Amino acid sequence: MSRKFLRHKTKGTIYNYNELTLLDSANLVEVVTEEEAFPERFQPKATKGRKSRLTLEEVKIEEPDPTPPSLAEEAAEGWPK
Image (cartoon, one colour):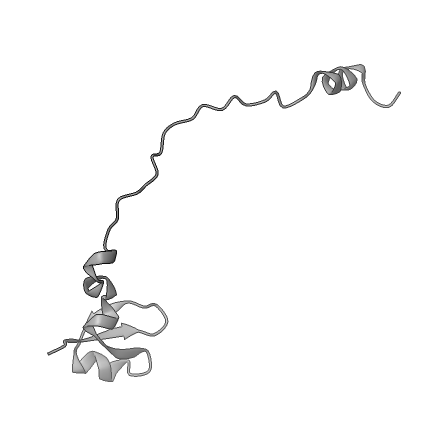
């Protein structure tokens, strides 16, 4: 037997099924099954986790000088000429 839950239509918040809550805000909530409310619980075991083939190692990259020397000299001379 699948349990029932209430899902808020705009926010997506999941609540336990309660007749009074359903009646109070009938246009804001919808009745959903447990599988719709919590799909991660019903995910096949084969796709739950895989080992990564990648190894993430730190690679140090030297940052280039932000201004080339010719541009620095031109800026030091002043503008306009």
